[in-house]
Image 1 (cartoon, rainbow, N blue to C red):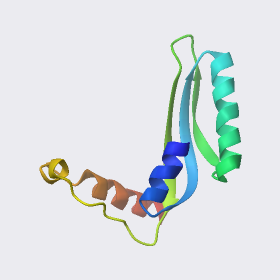
Image 2: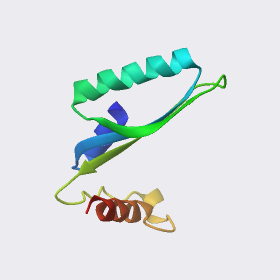
Image 3: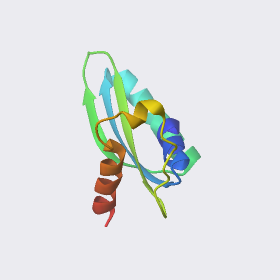
Length: 101
């Protein structure tokens, strides 16, 4: 959760919510959910949904942060980014704006 909250703040957004996916053995998923609950309270960002799958496979965790910003902060373009084929981040930000409305 810290990475999601930090990424939103770095882009000038106020974190609003987290959506997660947790998979793994029951004892591990319960510990992960307790950790997410703790972090949710610590950062004052609610976990508003997600997906839980209890399995005997190795555990996995992913999270998606939702936030709000007055304007999109555009990071400086690096040489590597300048050669990228498409501005994927701008399309993602645009999609989130549409969803938020």
